[in-house]
Structure formats: structure tokens, C-alpha cells
Image (cartoon, rainbow, N blue to C red; front, side, top):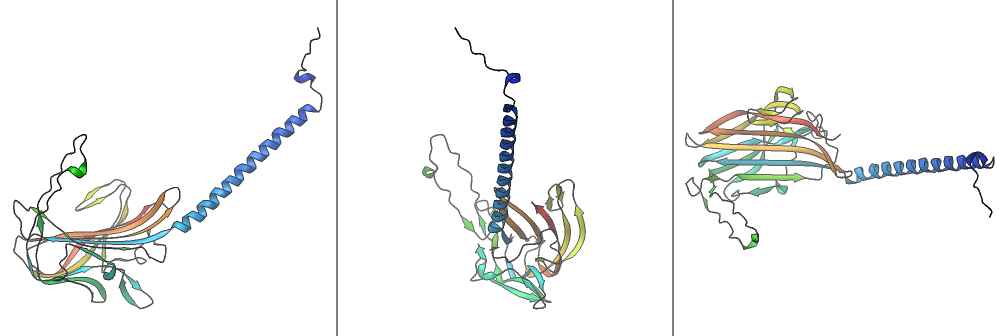
Length: 295
């Protein structure tokens, strides 16, 4: 019987070890090259994807409600505006032709943009602005096996005054979304560069390590910006107990797609409650938050 014994490493031919080392080195070179090519392709994809999907957006909202009727009313409300160096004038980005209205009786209430001391303001005026109330809708629980479409639909009841049947005030709303902004928005330093509610006066700068409430405004953890005062010019007759609530907000956002939507933004919010009749200029405290999101 003949027994074949495989040679050990020490018994391999002298040229075998260099050949194995060469093959291993070649494999490592190929692997590194593949990784480099993949990395370059991924970077190239991201560099193409981000600009192709990038979009700058302005978002404007106004909400107002009154507990009772306002007689002979003229409400001049600040608008997001900027100084246009080309025309030498202050210009608002709000375009009423692209603005949606909800719960506004536009046949009786006039809504237009008016220039006041060189600053665009929203003029809401009417002989009478009547409040709107509705009933409270209670949620209907869905039991196992029930189809939501088979449940009774809630019935809304509306009235022009408060009652036990209609205790919930309904807000009048304006909304405009402008997706055709032609530049990257300066969300870190919008003061002097981007639209803001005008005319404004900075009363306090802040940078919060911790979040929390500051009067009527919630500041998230790590937020930075400033508090401002902006004038509202209001004229109307109302009962002493009447409350007119006005809330307006503007936001500028850059957004793009890289393995999901990414964005950064700045936003400004102003809200206040005016009690009784008004006839004059009322400075209102607002907040401006800058540099939120991904950079």
C-alpha cells in the first residue's frame, strides 16, 4: 500500500509562499479600490440629490376670533416684509391672490394690503365683524369589529353668540404657502436679510440651554433668537368684556432630500388678546427663533 503524505508549509515549494502573498495583496487592493469607488459614487449621488430636491418655502398664517361683535372695525395687522433695495421700498411676501380663507365672510369683511408709514400691513375692516361659535364634538369610540364609516357622523351647529349648545369659538383663518422662493433662505441670520413682521423693535436676545415657557411662548431646548415688539393698529367698538384674539406666524424653510427629508428654518410668532374696545396703536410682544434644523 502506498501512502501519500501532503507536504507541510515548510515542505511547500519555495515559489508558493510569494504567490499566495501576491494574491492576498491583489485582493486587498481590489477591495480598497471597490470601497473607494463606492464612496465616490455615494458622494456623487448625494451631491446631485440634495440640489435637485432642494426647495425654499415661506409659510404665513393668521388666526383671529372675537367673543362678541366688533362694530366699525379696522384691524391693521403686521405682515412679513423686507426692504427691497431694487425699488427702495418695503415689500411683503404675502400675496392675497394665493391666500386661502377659512370662516371669513369676505362679502362683508374687506381684506387688503395697505401701506402705513411705508410699511405694508394687512387691513381687515367691516361695519360689523360677527363672532362664530360651534358645538363641542365628542369623540365616538370605535369598538372591535366596528367600521368607522358605519358610525354616526358628528353634526356641527353654528351660532353668532356663545351658548351652552355652542360654547366653542371658531377662528377666522388666512393661510399662504409660497413654494417659489428663488433663493436659499438665510435661516441663521434672517434679521436684515429675510421677511419679518414689520416694523419691529428687538427687546431681548436669548439663547436657551433649557426649554420652557416664557409668557405666552414655548421655547424648545437649545433654541436661540430674540423677542420683539410689533405694533397693531386697531379701531373698533365692543363690549368691555369682549376679547379679540389675534395670532400670526411666519416661517422660512430650506428643505432637501438625502436619505429622507432634511430641513432648517427660522420662524416668528406674535399673539395677543385685546379686551374691550380699541382705538390706537398697541405694541405686541413676539418671538423670533433662528437656526433650527440641519446645516
